[in-house]
Image: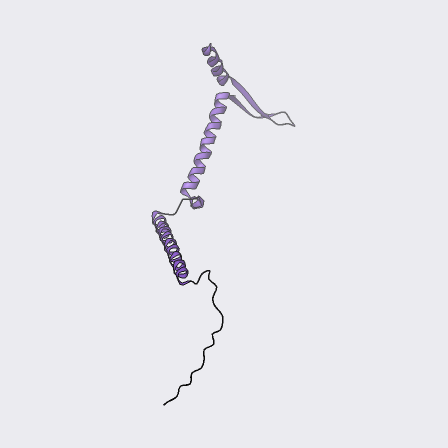
Length: 131
């Protein structure tokens, strides 16, 4: 039974059909094609593969590749960007350490969270004489 089904599928793929393009006013045949389902499938597959390969070639061999994310110009640029990223990360870490250190010093000196005493102090004046 499976042989009969595959046989009919192959026969349907190989059956020939005629496609005619006619002039609507004069009913004259302009172009006619003799096609099968297999040939139509092969033409469409080939066209699809050609379009994909054209798009890939366009992206690989032209400056359009620079618009793709992650595609840098060369390895030197990529290394320079990686070095800059590592430097930036280390500077951010040092900045966080310094902020924590200064916050601890401010807390130890009592500058943070404690109201300042602003009451005036009366200091008596002393007379200094040369005796």
